[in-house]
Length: 419
Ligand code: C6P
Image 1 (cartoon, rainbow, N blue to C red):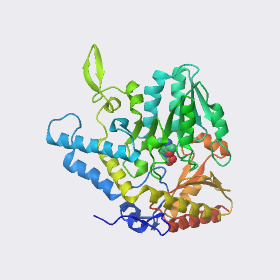
Image 2: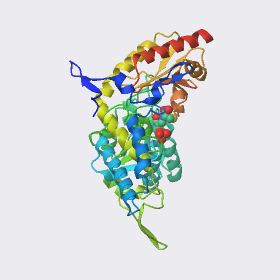
Image 3: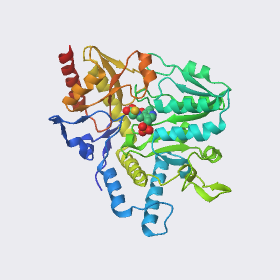
């Protein structure tokens, strides 16, 4: 058993042994363009620790089989591993039951599942779905689609110039027509942490349901779906150190039970005849077809890994690193931070006067620094701030101050070239 990655400092705040943690991520040890890789594109996807890579490889080497079908030993082992991962995710989110944990391809599919299974069967003309101006396209387009299909109306709560939801306006938009509030926990484009517990409380006070897009929250903080009171919570495995192609929809059991299935096929049925079909119980009713078994196993390993590092310790470390990042970025002439909310996590989005975000991304890549440039699938946010694109440095607990210094040096180089 290896030593724990975090310890408690004198003032009680947990601290991380980042140098040791980095050794868990083999990809971080490489050089890009002759410089050490500085990976600051964690909001797009995170890197994977050996524990996750090994769990996936072990599964394919030793247990690979289809789940819920075979009576042979391998199928039983694969099923046990997959269902153990579901239970691990249940604990991670503090869901009441593993029946409430639906495996999906990711956040996008989880939100589409709710839009189609719940929304299409429930929403009526005149009903309203309330989102915010800072949502990722994954939490906009599925609602636009289901509103078109049902005659419901999409409402959008405005944001202020810091990139925070204007809560008075949010509250004003809630009414007896509101059937669902769908909000991001953390904005991928701005880093804003939304007051989701309060937003859910307000939604419930108006007898609306609440869905939280947790794609950018779960890698950075403790998420307790029961404490939040969320009706639905969506996440992506690949953003929290797990594999791509696997995600989760948490849904309250009573709600999921009452919802019709979304996709039809094998594994989601009890009995099929040409006269009719009897659907499986939860969670299988929403998992048609052979699932991403290795992905589930890998996600379970990622959750175990995160628990070993300690989510409180991660949140404390990243808050300090984000403050350092923003302070250092302010030293770059002509740089404007986009997203200056009081409560932020792990994201620094910015524009640099005279340099297009894409050119900036290319130049910093020459320094071995990986950032993302573009609209970050949040075009309404770009439009609000009057920019076509931003550059975005997004952090994980394995990033360091030295890496932020390398980013700043690369940005200053870009300025010399374009200035
Ligand atoms: N944001 C980013 O670079 P998927 O693709 O389904 O795993 O996650 C979609 C998604 C949903 N909500 C939020 C808040 C997100 O940030 C994302 C993914 C990536 O910011 C890719 S655009």
